[in-house]
Every structure is written in C-alpha cells, then in structure tokens.
Length: 246
Ligand code: NAD
Image 1 (cartoon, protein in one colour):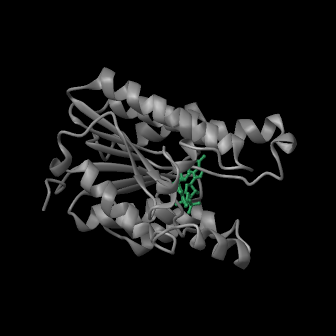
Image 2: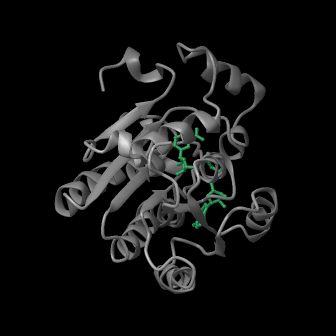
C-alpha cells in the first residue's frame, strides 16, 4: 500500500457522491475514516453500508460554532488528524447572473468557501504532519455560465489552498483538486436527459467521471507517493478543459 494504513482521515460531505466514494477508498486502503455531513439520513445509510467508518458526525460546515462542536466530538475518537478531504459543497444553477439573490449567494459561499475554511482551521490545529485536500472544481478555473456563486467559491478555494500550502509547509501539504463533470446525485439532479448528453458530448473521453475515479486520485494525492506535491491544483476532467488554455 501507499502509507495510508491507520492514517486518520476526515472526509466532509462523505455521505454522498465523491465524498462517499472517497470514504470507501480510504477504508479499503486501511485508513481510519471519520465523516462530517449535514444530511443525517444519508450519513446513517453510509455508516450502515461502510461499517468500518470510525465516526460520523451530523454537522453543517457553514456554521462555525457547529463545526467547533463537531471537532470536540471527533476528538474523543481521533485525538489528531492526518488527512483532511475538505469536500462538502453545494451548487445551484441560476437562470442568469441577474437572478442570483444575496441569500442564494451567501448560502453557496458560506458552504463551499467559509465551511472549507472552518473545517481546515480546526483540522490544522490537530495536525502535526499531514495533508489537506480542498475540493475545488474546473468551475474555479473558467467561466461556466449560470454558476457565478459556485465558480467564485471554487476559485477562492484555489487561492486559499495555495496560501495554506505556503504557510503550513513543510509539515502540512495542501492541494486543491479540480474535477470536471462527475456523475453524482448533486450533478444528476441538475440535468435533463438532453443536458446530460450535451455535457458528455463536450468531454473528449465522452462521459462523466465515476466518483470512484476521483477517489482514487485523492488517495494518491494524500499518500506518500505524492510526498513532494504541495501548493498545486490538479484537473481531472476527461479532457474537457483541454480545448481552452487554463
Ligand atoms: P453530492 O451532493 O453528491 O454530495 C455532497 C455531500 O456534501 C452531501 O452528502 C451533502 O449532504 C454534503 N453537504 C453539503 N452541504 C453541506 C454542509 N453545509 N455541511 C455538511 N455537509 C454538507 O455532491 P458531489 O457531486 O459528490 O460533490 C462533492 C464535492 O465535489 C463538492 O464540493 C462539489 O462542488 C465538488 N465537485 C463536484 C463535481 C461534480 O461534477 N459532481 C465536479 C467538481 C467538483
């Protein structure tokens, strides 16, 4: 294996989609995994499906006080954390930039950016040596219409990741991942069948990623095999952005 055995891993948004596949992957690599997710029913289901998970906490990462409380609960199981997969996120398709309300804007930024900061901040206090991976998106690198709030949150995560990487080196590596289209509940819910096909047609590999393919890359980036990698972002998108220079 790649040095992930017995590592203490926290995955936010681990009760669905990419996060859940990541939980599964790290469990298979022999890691001790904890999940933070706001959806208690999905979390319960995940804990039943992956009984090796060490701890699941229902928490809304956009609430800083709730995050602090969740970490106190986690401390009882994990006195320290080795790897954070900072993955919880939401996206909302807006009719146009003009229709985005301040409340909608705040909801997306509070979850995707502020939530990631709250969790990273509490994590690094409990991390001597380790790895933080922030889940950004190709939407953080280019203009995807109808998603101004989401795009802005994911671009800001790239800046946050770079800065953390420089300040926290050499003890902590910090990386951002930029997936393209991944077939998860979040993504599928936004599509009509026609939209789904259009997205596939725009991807040179002709399909969405499977969440497991993202999870495998996350496991590599978190492992000792990637020990000289920090401060960078990585695109995993089936070639979608290769058409434009990013
Ligand atoms: P998903 O909806 O399947 O899963 C997201 C999980 O995060 C859910 O379990 C949800 O309950 C949890 N969550 C959402 N808001 C939360 C909050 N405030 N506090 C705690 N938990 C919260 O989504 P997914 O597609 O697996 O996306 C996971 C991450 O990957 C997101 O950050 C997303 O932006 C990013 N991403 C997804 C895609 C894609 O195509 N699916 C592409 C690029 C990046």
